[in-house]
Structure formats: structure tokens, C-alpha cells
Amino acid sequence: MGRKRTRQRNHVYLCVAVVMCFAVIGCATGGDIVEPPNETVPAGSDVQRDLADARRDFASARRRDLAEGRRLLAAGDYQSALRINETVLKTSAGKPPADEALFNIGIIFAHPGNRSRDYQRSIASFRRLVKEYPRSPLADQATVWVGVLEENIKLRRASLEAQQENAKLKQIIEKSKAVDIQMEEKKREETR
Image (cartoon, rainbow, N blue to C red):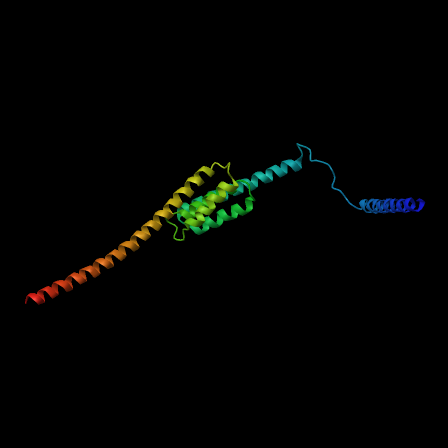
């Protein structure tokens, strides 16, 4: 009986020794870790004012870029306008005015004067705006644009199908006319 208790006690001592080793090793390496100071920048400090000024400057630069993109769009320079809006979108990192840039990209791809217009890309841009910026004032307009463009795509498909059907019917009519002409010629020959 005495031996079983000793073995169990030895296991307990071993476990305690291992835990102590880990604790000592952890304490030894913990002193080398440098933690950042837990200080905050005072509310009225120059650093905080400079940071706020930099944010305002960055936002106003993005706004100027968007205004330039709108000017280029109005002038018919779609590729340059697209490039500017894509740059604003990338540099805004998910914050306004990225929503406005997405909206402008959708407009550029849907613009009837744009020779390389792409309704699918336009719809994708508007949907992304609605998904990523649901509270944007442009989200409702983007939803309307998606509906209009999808309806336009459906109508174009229907129009194309109708044109193909018309072409088939014209061929049938031409064949029918040819058959009628042949039958009339046979009747004329029979009557002679």
C-alpha cells in the first residue's frame, strides 16, 4: 500500500517541478519583451492637431480628385476619369469618399457616350457600393441604377432575339415567294 502512494506522490512532485520550470523560463524571457508605453497623446497636443490636419488634407485631396474625375467625365475623357476614380477608391481604403468613387465608376461604365461601356461592370460597381456602404447617400441611387441597367440588358436581349426571329421570318417569306413564283410559272406553262 505504501508504495502506490509514493509513486502517486512522485508524479505529483514531477508535475509541480515541470510547472515551476515553465514558470521560471517564462519569467526569464518575459523581461526581454518591450511593451509600448501606455501613454496617450493629450487632447490638445500638436501631434493630434497635425494628425487631424493630415486627415483633412488627405480627404480634401480625394475630393479634388473626384471633382477632376467628374470634369473629365463631362468632357468625354472616360478612361482618365475611370483611372482617377479607381485611384481614389484604392487610396480611400474603405472610407468615404470610396462610395462616391464606386458610384462614379458605375456611371462611367454605363455612360452612353463611352465606347467601351460595360453594363455588367457598371452593375458590379453599383452592387459593391450598396454592399460595402449601405448607409451612403448614394446607395439608393445605385440600387435604382442596378434595376435600370438590368432591365436594359433584358430588353436588349429581347430585341436581339426579335431581330433574329424577324430575319428567319424574312427568309421563310422569301422562300415562299420563290415557291409562289415557280407555281405561277408552271400554271402559265400549262395554260399555253
